[in-house]
Image (cartoon, rainbow, N blue to C red; front, side, top):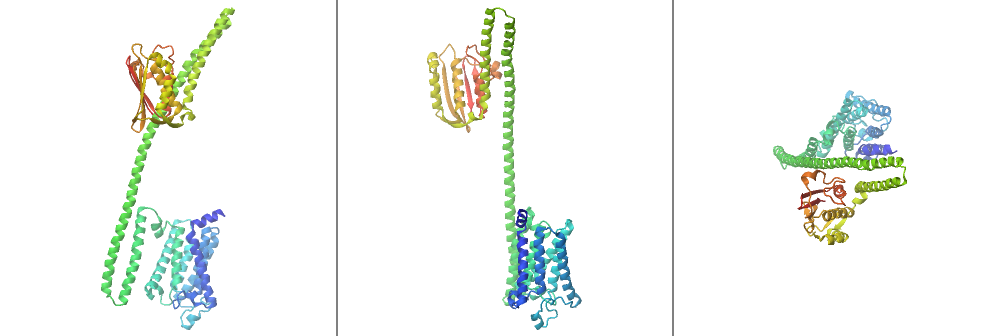
Length: 533
């Protein structure tokens, strides 16, 4: 059921045109059965659609709808041959000037008999010829061979052309155009229905023939469709106006031709101008799309480089971290193993107690080491990266309170200036930890020759925020220690509380949030840490 509905969506036009053809045929049959002239001619006094023509339309409409489902192609081909043979028999009567008795087999054409027509009840030769083509088209239209489908497509184009000429004859009131034979003429509703059916049926193979010229999306097809839409109506309107003016003797034939040529030239110029504008618009859109793609590629390359740099840094940190773990745990574990050996060999109670004290000290040191390593591991936990709006002054005031004892003891002057960038969107835990470590180090590694001076300052750096921390402490020999400044457990001063963890954690936290940290320092003059968030 769903598959059938999807097919109907794909072939909506063909379905409705096929249904209209069937209904039209039934209406005309009703007109013949009850002698209702308006149902046979549409316009009183015009040519009527013959009984057999109505049967042709019913059969053609049924085949068209069957082609949508396309389940029993043998049945479709059978009725296609039946249609073609039926129409061919009708046509051969006109060619050989014979009567095989099929024209009034179902019903008598009383109107034609009263007019003493030579072939009452017989469709016009051009109508029969069109239905012969329809029978052949239906037979080939679903063929697996592209050549057969192309033949069917151009057969439909021929039907469209012949019926269109007949329609123009009615519009311009030129009987020689819609008669198209010396015997009988094609009915108006026959011409219109044949034209609509032939055009809609080409959509079974929309990429073939003239239909493909209007349905494809390439620039040439767009140009052709745009010109066709403007030129064809212009030709019809100008031709109709010229014909009317000539018939009313308002203008001569020569003047009419000249006027037609002039007007058509102007319309052609307009069509060319509009097509030029359309093509330029398409070209500008193409250029804009290319520019956007180029820009996106540049941005993508930049992001790839940044990401590659970030991943390279992360890999280096992982390598360093694995080395640090193996290095920092190997010593305590080796020490425990040695102590265990000594403990087994030791016989005295005093010796065992002393070795047990060594055990406790080693285990405590191992515990501290593991805590430091775990703190580094948890830095990248996503829950700690949630950003909130933070005020530097609030965090700084809280920080000074926590270090108030050390500040008073050392006589340090700790100042700040957050006027240029007072707030930041950042992780509260990380920012407090970063500022805590930088202030702690500045106080810890102060010079004994002068009172500590420590200054925190924030400022705008392009579209980012920068925090700088300046001190006048011991400083760091960057030439000697710069490559390992932020390494875990790397110390550069003989201080009893130095563990070499603070700067490593600070750098890890800054980079985990996508920032970077740098340092400028001179020995015994102080250091400046700059963080770009």
